[in-house]
Image (cartoon, rainbow, N blue to C red; front, side, top):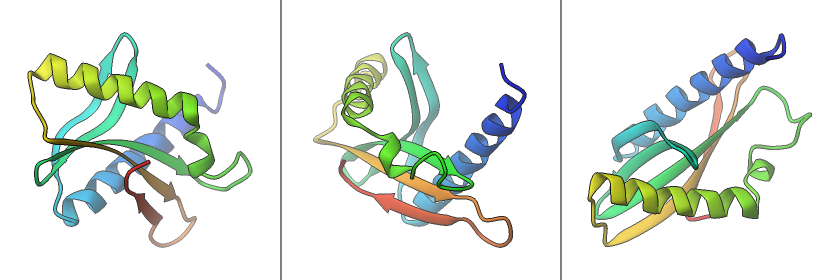
Length: 121
């Protein structure tokens, strides 16, 4: 691990907490957080009405490495789809609708983070 790894982990944890709070305040119910299997990890699994929502959280403190949106490419989206199916199978859940969302969190040096919820990637 590089010397910045603890800082990246802390930033990621911060972003996931901000995203979770934002989504719960918007009326969603958290079913799981940081669910892992051999194929990868889902940051947040939520329910919104009858829809199961798999949410990827991307947190940045600056856009020098690209925006949070740019981090979710086709490969990442395909992996999230596979992980959603694996989560449903492991939890024996049937959902009438499944959606993959992104919550982009921009950490501000002062004040509140900027949060953008992108529905249905």
